[in-house]
Length: 96
Image (cartoon, rainbow, N blue to C red; front, side, top):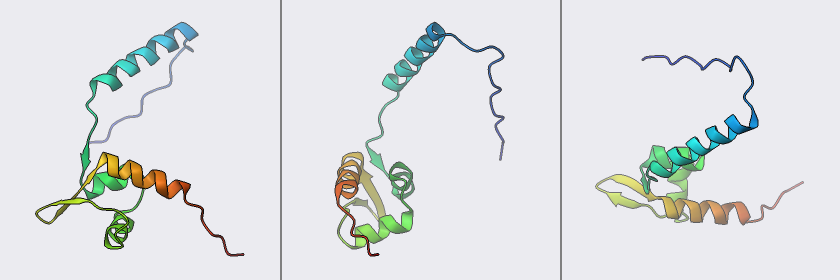
């Protein structure tokens, strides 16, 4: 496996104008990159920052409903966003 080297820190600090130019360039790249609409299990775990085992449990419990292509689970971006939005707004009962 090939290792990638970390980028060195800039030799001189950049000014506000250069920072704005860089931010504009990053925005253009983000616009041009297509948004992924469907995820396999590992991609869904990375997108939500949940473990694959927790995603399996949520599917088994009926709280998350992926599609299936053969035996492969496929999650839509929208369903993951809706699930995470609901999950983060649900109050958690704490036992003291």
